Length: 353
Image (tube, rainbow, N blue to C red; front, side):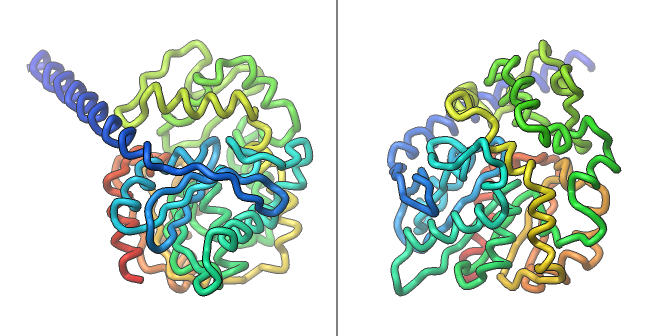
């Protein structure tokens, strides 16, 4: 019986791999129609990838990602009558001009300003509203975009990170230290140059693999000088069906060019964001919204997050929140892990408008 079980499991894994190869080839063929542009935005030369015609859907990535994280969504939305636009954010990929050695130039106000400038650049005068989809840090930025400039957004779909209201009790770094200690990744990211030096000792592809394949509900720990606690430096990483070696190569090639500092700076200004955002205490997001996360997502399991999502706090802060979806068996990088389901959730919501 045990032999039969393992045989079935092995055959299922082979089928998944075959399906993934076919799916990847299909996406690769359709990705040939994606157009790449550079747009002057807020002092940056911002790289965007776009495809399709129709209402604009702006896709905003997280850490440590790129426009490429939305490859499945770009193709799907373009095939269904939308113009899908995905930038490399400030400090990432082929977007240049950000002073990466100055973390103070990476506040939430800079990041929202980049998106406002991009929206103005890609829309016509008569219609300057777009649909927006965000994930991870992209979700943080787009919640704030909708809070600061609801006049720019028709509707919002966010993944992984719910709206995080200003907390008078303290900033995020202090809360992470209290909850998880000094080895928590957000805490380890605070000292300029320190985490970059440690990651430089590892192959960039290995770092990408260990981050993108992380699917524990608990936090990521990076003890000083020891690499990732969940996966030792020399431990091999088996890629899941949704992530190919080619995907890893693309992410790694861009990170090797830019380094990690740009992305890590988003965490280095958490305290500054908290200080600068005090005037927004109690402000609400008044944009039609949908939120999707996985039940294995590390953010979903942070202290207080489940209670906030399910017991009224989230709905109070986002009054036009129409739906919350918790996907079983899904982890943090949900738009890549579950592209079919995420694509359908996105388009079903956008078609209401």
